[in-house]
Image (cartoon, rainbow, N blue to C red; front, top):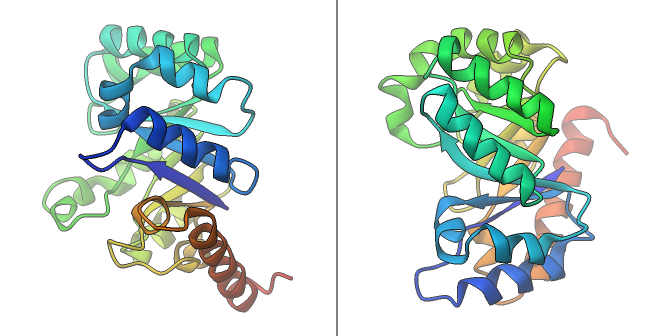
Length: 226
């Protein structure tokens, strides 16, 4: 299962860049993740027009980490503009934070996704010390899913063991950061998040098909899928 991260390069016409890649890939992938750079550059209104009517996952990757009242306002605005999922950090805790955000997400139909580990090396310094607590917190706030890195399959396996079937696992780090397509799925992830290896390619569709084929081959080998 493939989610494409739409993080434009600094020299791009961001509106055209996002729209072209969305139109090219929308029928072949399960969703898109829009990060803060694109949201700042384009704004929620133009993004809403690009994605109007889209039924796949549309994730606002803001990695929210604030008090509950502020995050709730953000979630309401995202829902108004067509997003159906939002990423927040787990480390901010429950009381007056994720309790309020999760309530608004349920009310507005947003899927709440919590970061329990990250794909860069610095995640080991603080975040990774609390993966178990973060997964338990995600379950307690009825999160839809969690983010765990494709670059460290052992983290994905640990998260899957803790989460069972209650949480979806979304794994970034495929491609430029070093993980191969399909490896996160083989470790227990539900979705692999892939960005630059597809979106910065001279042939976006061909690169996406290559990733999908590699996912399929690895999943067939490790999970016995056909």
